[in-house]
Length: 323
Image 1 (cartoon, rainbow, N blue to C red):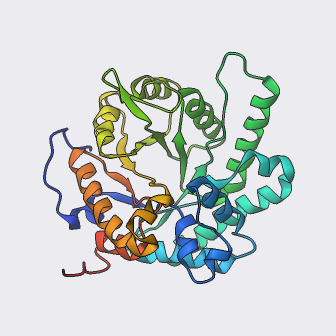
Image 2: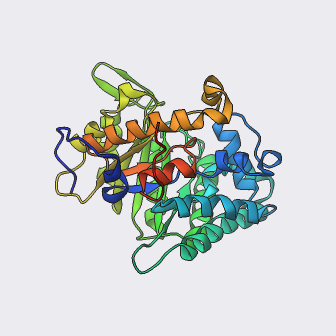
């Protein structure tokens, strides 16, 4: 059960023991690995995620190494690189895109099995890409049908390999409901949904669409079953109470876990002296994770920039360096 809204101090060791920890995606890690800079170039996160998705078949061992680093660091859930899939991939070469989707999910499953034991099961979350679904009024039926087919093909391709569906970084209530509904039409596996928090106005958290988080959450729960976790992708400390907002508007009696993560753009690393500054950034991120736990988050992502060696501190796999 989720804890009450008041804060309770969170020792660092509690994160790995009481929260479900999932990785922040392989894109930035691939760039950091030996030989990875020729595969994933530094740039906007969405571009890096797309390059990571396209790297699975030509560079399977490099991708396997990235997944292994996360699993050995102690994450509970590996997320597939399909978050980087774009509709243009389907338009340009559908068969090739489907092969990439299968390869991404299968590789994550293989690593999850290799790192699971009787005491610990590593699960795989199949990421449903945030295709730019248009609003109800004025939508081109042909475009909606194209997005629907792409989403269903993605789900079918990953179906044998995933334990959880992750409808990630939703920007509007129509987008989230459309994508989650497609998942429900194909599968009864649990669904995680995360919302990208854009700002705060008139006492409400706002999505990029301009809709309030409250309206989006209520709308989603009224349409889609199988939801087991709702999360906020938090951009800055001022939005951390979005976790409490999620709980407030989740239907009472539903067995849903609250969670969060924060995908800081890779450009932020430059302010800290390049990738060498990741340790400093990770220390701050760990403090953020502890605050989210105190508010009530029990499904927590490690963020795109957090390296496995720092994740291992949270999960108890490695001792924190003494300063």
